[in-house]
Image: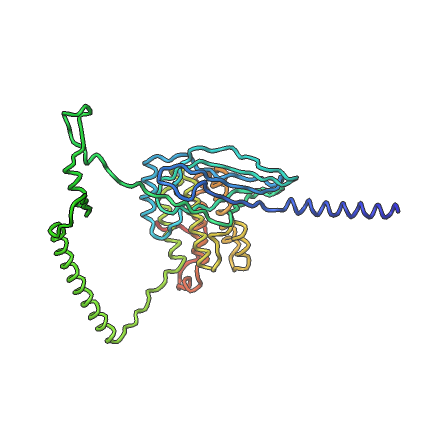
Length: 380
């Protein structure tokens, strides 16, 4: 009986150790939402991130970098227009209004349910995408990783209806306020906009005579254009079709190198914009990896990209350079790190030569062309 009791205790101990290990290794899960589906530009909206994690897992919460000045917003828009190759850059389209403390919603043993809430003002119109993400550190591990939510949030931002009522005001000495409504100007504005109000009056053909004449002319013009269009289409169809070959597709390394040169000219980190610099740099590399090897790098974490490239033939220098750039970018975006100038330049150089040294072999078969290394100077 005593030996049976010892066996039961040993089995329970093994089960407890296994469960504790499984819990410690559990990766956090996050979901995000906006308090409203659509707002007007300039309005406030709450952005909420729900985090399910183990007690042993440390996390880093995103930072919205405060409120940009109008000059900063103008410079960002001009910089975006100057780069035609890439469209996905981390812009300050949100202004931080209130940053609430991280709140513990529920506790279940080692399992925590946390909630982070921001109040944001949205300063752009259209459909704004935002994919919730955090930085997390597994227990007994010094290197962080970026964790993204499964779905991308989309906030619809409407523009203001532009209506200047001061157009209809005029000075009125007889009024105590000193001004009144110019009824003639208002009526003229309504007529110009094609609105005609007729109250308690019989139908008079003369009132629509001019519109009828203009309508008839418009119908004749439309009919003539339609006839010419049909005639032209029949003439084209009757001829021998000419096969138009599509232009050559731009290789991914050409696109990436062009984007890197344009990024360098923006001088982001030189002006203290480390987060935008490293977001743009990693977006260029993620896009290049996606097109070069058919890997969905834009939606992967740093560790997932490294794992996906495991079976790809890369030199040790190229693989190490990519890992170093991605790790540094994670620390800048989520831990507010500010690398020194030498490290920023070194990461740019690593990105440049990563693209050059991993482009298709056919592009490298140029007789007499020296091998590119980290010591090779980049031509301006």
